[in-house]
Amino acid sequence: MSIAPALVLREGDRDRLAELTRLPSVPSGLAKRARMVLLAADGMPNAAIARTTGVSRPTVIGWRDRYEQGGIKALQDEPRSGRPAEIDELTVVAATLAGAGRPPQRLGITHWSSRFLAAELGISFATVARIWRKWGIQPHRIETFKFSTDPQLEAKIRDVAGLYLNPPENAVVVSVDEKSQIQALDRTAPMLPVMPGLAARRTHDYKRHGTTTLFAALEVATGKITADACYPRHRHQEFLRFLKQVAAAHPGVRLHVVLDNYGTHKHPEVRKWLAKPENQRVTLHFTPTGCSWMNMVEIFFGIITRQAIRRGTFT
Image 1: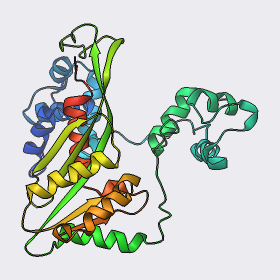
Image 2: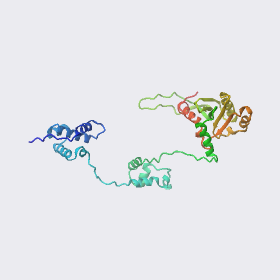
Image 3: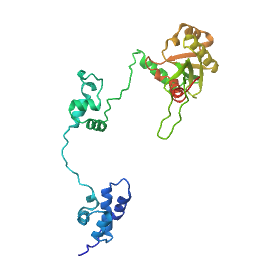
Image 4: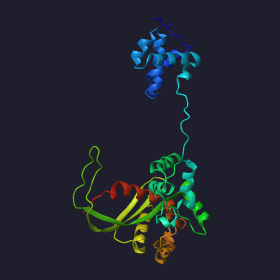
């Protein structure tokens, strides 16, 4: 039996072939073919290459020939035609989005699931789920939004945003708001710790120990917080008491206070206090209706809710 001569590699191919045999991201088939070509280039007989790589001798000969004709590119898998898809993806997408994404009333459901749509189209739910993933369609998710009907929307946005971006000189800008109805929930048993493979767990039942309201003022320039959680309610009396506390914390300067449109913020008693000569250094700025998120102190409330309140136990 004649022994085939060593395979002659093209210039620069040896390093590339060696790289294909090492990289974990390279498909196993391509890595094996690259190894066959390298062994052939080292002069190993075809039969020995077949035993080393676990393939037949004709397979080795075939890939040697492919490399000689087309180089490394010829070692790639050729595209396979296969059986044409029987399900038109666009049909599934169109059926999902038709009617603003609402299923027919006869089904009695508010949104599509992969199983409901699959039953409607007569295909498998796995096919529907695959197409949804490919097109980024998620009928089960819903988010909220809100339109502001405030006729002074743009003016108020400019006012509040201007205070944040370019506050007046020799003045202090604070964001003030209340987080009401903070419940003091006392779990009936201690929380179980985090374990490998398990989330932290706590009892479903709890005792209620009343509620409180947190008043907070965030100094926009420094992030300093002035807070008071001694109020079980949040009427104009409590707000005015806290407003006086904020004013006392920033004496002798112009004080700009960003607020939302809660009724207690505009109470006659609050206006009366602001009208006094010694308090005219305090100016209230209101966010547009439905845009309380513009009040930066909401960020502080979000942080303490996530980090201290939501999982907290209070006796």
